[in-house]
Amino acid sequence: MLRWSLMLAAVGLLAWGCSKDKPETDPNPKTAPEQPADSTLNLDALVADTLSADSLARLEAERLEAERARLEEMINRIMLDDVYFDYDRSELTEKAKVLLAQVAEILINENRFVVIIEGHTDARGTEDYNISLGARRSMAVREFLIAYGVDGRRLVPVSYGKERPKVQGTDESAYSMNRRAHFRVTIE
Amino acid sequence: MPAQGGHDNVTMNKIKLLFVMLAWAVAMPAMAAIDTIAVDVGISVFKLMPIGIVPFEEEGKIKWTNEAPHLILKRDANLSGRFEAVPSDKFDLVLFSKKRARQYVSGTATKLSNGKIKLDCYLYAAETKDVLLGESYTVKPHEVRQAVHAFFDKVVYRLFGERGVASTKLAYVSKIDGVKQVVISDYDGFSRRQITRDSSINMMPVWQKDNKGLVYVNFRHNRPNLYAISFGGKETPLFTQFSQTFSPAVNPKTGELLFSVTDNGKTEIYRGDMKKGSAQKFLHLKSNQVSPSWSPFASEVLFTSDRGGSPQVYAVGNDGTDVRRITYMGHYNERASWSPEGDRIVYTSMDDGKMNIYTCALDGTDITQLTSNAGNNEHPTWSPDGKLIAFASDRGGNYQIYIMRKDGSGVTRITNGAENTSPTWSWFFGEKKFK
Image 1 (cartoon, chains in turn purple, orange):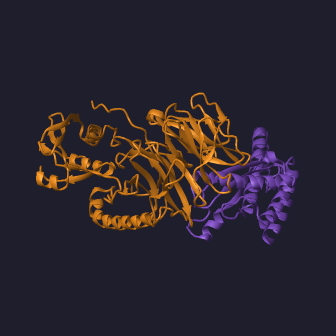
Image 2 (cartoon, rainbow over the protein chains, first blue to last red):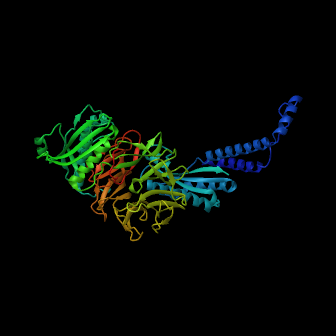
Image 3 (cartoon, rainbow over the protein chains, first blue to last red):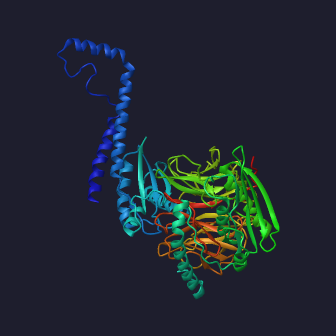
């Protein structure tokens, strides 16, 4: 839980910072390469610069995309912590609510995130019933986040039933890890 | 624990188990030779009709693609839920009398110059050697199996006045390169063919009316969605107005679909027209509903609801009114399906984390446990004649498809290899024409 709080704080700041960065361009001008002493090189750079006015724009777009992907990967890594449920239940446990409150804080502060909330079940029971159970779990998480103030349009619930277990096995230790809601975050 | 069959049933199950184990031991060597099939003779509470099986006379050296015709007939007889095969190397009236086989099947096989094989198949009265039925098929070597199945169905019709299932098929889910794919095969596990290719998850196959194709669930959009697929591989997304759809059930009379829709965390059953794409809510209940199943004449529908706090089976009229609860024993009764004969329901029940298959009368009474002490047993599906139930079990280590008689006897494994689950039996096929 402590890990969560610290990392969330870190990412919160980072995400916040990045979104403000967005309109800025690279602080190093393109005409000033690493070795300014060589004049011929400068000339070449100048030629290259005039030739690639829109390749600059492309570079900038690529940089933004890389930034977006990096942030997306980071937020997904942090939100690797899943919300766990009791057997055949979709009510949130007290532990789950603490975790979700922290998730809600990030989401409220960073409005570019779209969160897919996957509901999963353990291997016991039928495929059909488990899809409906997973759906109830994803919805319980979604409703909590909405009640906390997150915009519901950014929270997409889906159910995988028992099709995507996190841990293989047929004992309670595996089952308890598979009864979960998992977040998949994308950044618009 | 739904062991409500009483002492008789428990004893029965023990005897059955003993037989299953014995039969497995006996069947093992045969299995290795034939590669997919394990046969357990078992004992049936229904009376089985003994039938003599005699090898065909062969004219010209014939190399059979997988099995000689009399072995196919023997398997069809033992799987049918109607017969008990009495195999004999030659016509043997003494043996047939002892075993009460009043009829026997045999024939001649002729290798033709064009590479085809001519099969003359006969059903005889044992005592008089009168021909009761004769059929002739001229087929390519790989079609022999289909031709013999077709003949066996004629034998069933001649002796019972009912259609047999030897020419029917199964659709099921097979793990191929780690991905759940939909496949079809003959009802005995032979002639397997992969139908889906998508690399996400493919599951819950059911047969369209007249076996024109399948309806199944796919996760390519990271959520469960229904698709129709032809056997040529042509796919059509179904009911795209809903974000999550699953649990399809085809109306045997009209072809329309019942299926589950998940919206806002609630799962409800809708009724839809596959061609038009339109669908309406079928049930107006506060509870979640999954696993719809039509009665044989589509006048009623079974489904599972958690309205009582745990999944239980309910029945409702085909207009969505008059809901009544069927199952009361145990805390998890799911995936009910109505026998084509009309008088019983088969369903999966979970107790202590283990799944087992039960049948009951239409009012929920007369509960009979069909599987026990053999891993998980689930996803039962009736043969179209109602004599057999196919299901998935992990009794042998990993999940495979098995067939048993409707009383739980004669359990026979029909698949092997990587995990095979979720079988659905086809409808009857029209008579096959061999060119």
